[in-house]
Length: 244
Image 1 (spheres, rainbow, N blue to C red):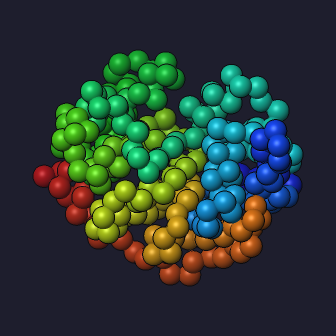
Image 2: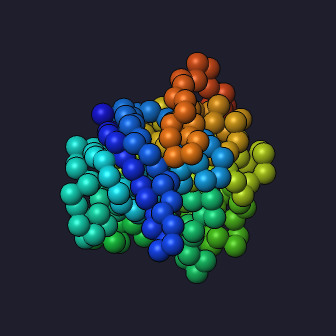
């Protein structure tokens, strides 16, 4: 079990009113799963992702990530967990504009204290995995939206995290680019990467193996996807482009 949550609650106190964003959430995710989290605005899905990513703390309950009791960690330990065990992929890419793709991918390893040779080797391998090796010297303004997101995925992967968290990763992309990105995620999942993805798009969620729906701070359904949309042919083309 890579993630275990029991009785997770989150209350935001604005001073005048208390908002209960999560209410007694129980969640278990096994290593190697590909999970979509869905729900309308204000349903609690973003709060859940922030707690899963150690960007926020639960008000109550128990959270264990890859055998570590997150609930008992201080801020310094949480930062270390974020760097070592969690890879983040955001809707807006969050790439540094003055750095090329390779340098952007190397960033988490700099914070982790890796040497220059190790950083380059692992960054090159991560870019190869997402089919973008031929663009490693390009800066973000020289890349398409889909290519920027693939750089962001490579950056998220480079420290071999226990889980990959993706928040609306196709939200800023056209349909074809979104399919490319989901193909990358599917291939990574086939290689054993645990992925949790927030999306409001049902067709994107259908690329995963499990869909969890939130409403009013609670899980209202948790269902397996019997036949995930298979995008492996797209990733084969991406890898062929990188090799060529």
